[in-house]
Length: 254
Image (cartoon, rainbow, N blue to C red; front, side):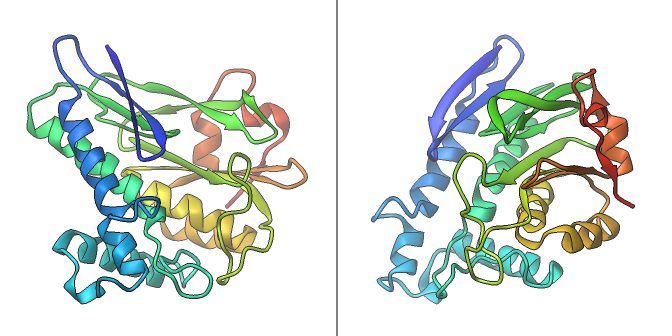
């Protein structure tokens, strides 16, 4: 059964077996929104961002998320960063994925036999209910699908970042200059890796795509400003249906 929640400025859908309630998911997302939203003046992160609260005095969860974001900043050579142009702190690049991750862990710990969480197109599945067919939106037409892929085995997560829906909001070298890619989707074993690397690919462009897809066990599909598509071999193998990127002439990566 599908349950729909509206939280963190997006729509979260949760697919659960009959008889299971989405309460753990709602609890996690509500707490994350209250703690990290920069649209809420009373959130802990807002108070850190505007100087009312020192980061060192923030709660352990905020400090742990910031430390995790810094680890990713180092791992990506600074392409992914929790700092806005001008130095402001912004953890939006990781907190939604952490919320999905935590909600999935709670569902599993509760004994839920199979589940799928979709938060604004970023998807994590338990992998216990067989292969999952997932659509990737076409950045040129939000009402259409670019392709469909299958999540199965150790590929349990997919995340998509880009400018098609929200404009150029992903900064590059602490600037908001237009990026080479308008959208990137990353398929990985966990949602945080998928989400962070999708953001990094959009922020860093083709060279970063080649670097990250070579260093992490992930599959990537990226769309450039001219509509050209690049896909790793693993992603091409995961494509499902005649409308997949292969039919549009996607170039191989690696």
